[in-house]
Length: 193
Image (tube, rainbow, N blue to C red; front, side, top):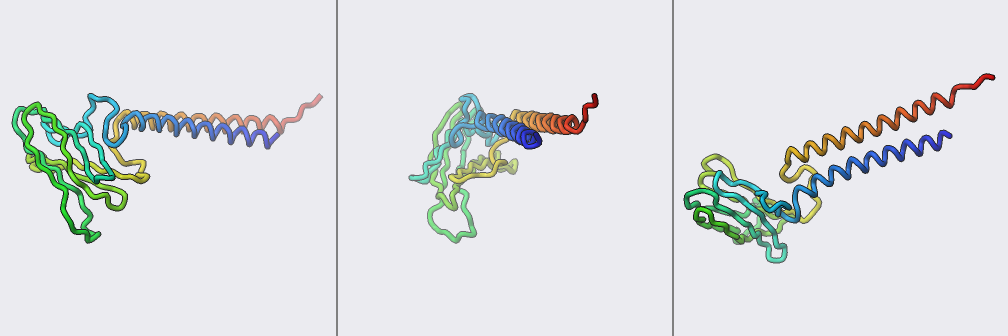
């Protein structure tokens, strides 16, 4: 009888963990599709400043280039600079990937910039004069390996899904544990006639 109870508790725990992981994975996979292409076309990948936005990006490993789609939503011409992120510790020399493009108001542009795949990752930063004045640049990082669970943009929806799935998993585990304790107590009672 005890072996059956142990198996049931293990089964309840395993199912609750699968539910927690499954719900959390649904939240992550619904957030982003592919490299940096949002699954919802109205979604902006990142805002460089109040006028310039990165709509999407894609990295070609063979050509070692980023293809970045930018949008100027402002009323002025804006110069956008895109520069490769390099590792200064590896001692590599060679051409540095860099592009500048001047965008007219309302314009959408696709820009290609070279970025060497180094240690299974490559990256660029996107900046404008206004973003630099405000002390911010927008990094775009590509990694072909398994990244950290905490990489990428987080959203309040993802936080809520994680919290709800964690609470549900804890509740299911508590119910299974309580059921096991109750079953343990009922096995020890003797019936007197």
